[in-house]
Amino acid sequence: MTSLPTRSEMERAYTQSDSSYDGVFFLGVRTTGVFCRPSCPARKPLPRNVEYFATPREAVFAGYRPCKRCQPLSAIGEPPPWAGRLLSEIERDPSRRFTDATLRSMNIDPARARRFFNRNYGMTFQAYCRGRRLGKAFDRIRKGESLDDVTFDHGYESHSGFREAFGRIFGTPPGRADGTECITVGWIESPLGPLVAGATDKHIVLLEFTDRRMLEAQIGTLGKVFKRPIVPGNNDVLRQLKSELKQYFAGKLKKFTVPLEFPGSEFQQRVWKGLLSIPYGGTLSYEALAAKVGAPGAQRAVGHTNGLNRIAIVIPCHRVVNKDGKLGGYGGGLWRKRALLDLERGERVYEADLFASVQAAPGSLQIRET
Image 1 (cartoon, rainbow, N blue to C red):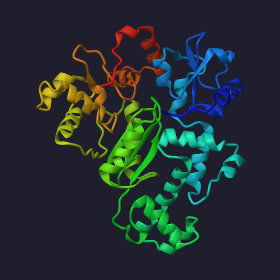
Image 2: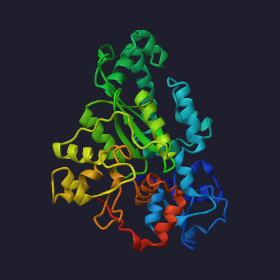
Image 3: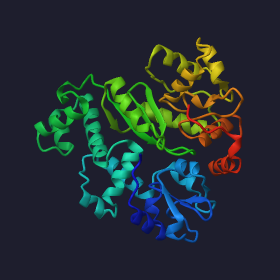
Image 4: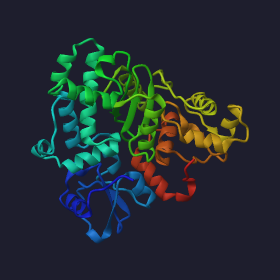
């Protein structure tokens, strides 16, 4: 479960229209049936008429529709301004130490930073900083720079301190890191909300919406499956994915070319490869997919494997629907599944309209997890 700020903190934030909390929580107004961002300019509801949610998904499934004034869904495509500023500072100087006092001097609440990074990156703020610092160091070592230069340029006072920190993250001393690979994770903005992507030097291995409830488990599984450390950053494969996703959401790309790696059992491999064979703009039922991968009658197992897909959109699990044509389930949220299918059919629909349609006709969709 994603932790929320205290009720008194959230009440203060929305009564003062504090935009720095946008994306940290959402409030549902019982008297109107809408949910809003904390910075919503509408008249403030009485505290007794408000309940709080960590994600838009939770608000929608509690029966609320998005506010037309503050459009809470449009805020989830990018980090809030304070977080964007902090990320820029980290990238500008990864060796800098960001203490709680440093954050306060930037008018950023340390607890807010911890919550944001936990939810969106699956790690604490300090862990993110350490990973980014060591990731930069790791890259320089692999390029042949001396251990002395890397150690002291990245804020470590001794070789032993650097070796200890490096070994904890990468599982090998820096002197033997030449052949070691890591999984680099980064944030990618999209019209349907932010995504966390992970890549080795050669392949994409993760792409998930940040509010998916299985994200933390997926990231943990990655480390076990690939037996590699996970550090924040960027690389050429992530840059290619970002470019292709931008073209895809603009309706200009129908086939991804970014290289993928998705280890799994023999059955899982067949299902995921089967998903890749579903053409852009098309759909397939769970039953038909089971038959296609040589497992007729195993639609439940196919549905379960579909839900374990770690590379959303590119491995198009959103193209699998129920036999009766209804959408079925989707780990990223049913509204996103409909949006992706509409996009591929040439229908551009705003997220708020999608949410509103789900609320207006709740009986028209089967909302369940596969």
